[in-house]
Image (cartoon, rainbow, N blue to C red):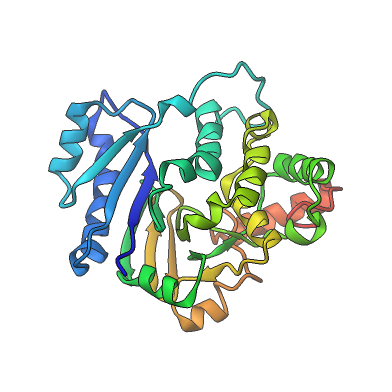
Length: 295
């Protein structure tokens, strides 16, 4: 059976400076090198954007990439709703709408596919099993990630669990467990997210104003829904990639998946021991919320 597969990302446009596409171009080259050149059947490469990647820029990106990219304008999901944002100003409206797109709207956009591989614009793949989708199908696996991650955003931990308690029948103490997938690179079944019972739960969480106001992230929402449905979040058996913006290298193999990469050792931002210690101390002093990652 020939699977319908897409490799996707939501990316930014840089209309005034083409040099800022270099990280994206490096990402595209790594996809060609690690996946596309090893496969006989077609994999679609899709870049979603907010309407700010011009035709000229699309041609430029394609000319620098060895793969043919399909650009999809999703600006209809990005509009100013006049909300007052809480939390850090650096996480602006666009960032929060990006989280909303990646947790909800993306599943409408990829509904024609069996599996997607999300590879964000700041990812460079160094090693990857190009036939992982067929293996997922054979093993009936729904979701693969490189690492687990905790939710370190205290405003999310202060608001999202209590929203769920008020508006759903989820066992929040059980599913809000800070064992979320690291979503800058993951593979997933599309059908799972478009099942009516999952889509309606996602819609309720993603389309509330609270998601924008409080900056609820897609990794935590995906994690709690997968936990709620008792879907195993699997680790890639073979993977090496660099998360460029966080200066973090993710490596997956049998030994690392049983130790460093296990769900009992979720990554938080990066592996800097001083940052981990700082967050832990800060939590012990300030946090009185049982849903915080350090509680």
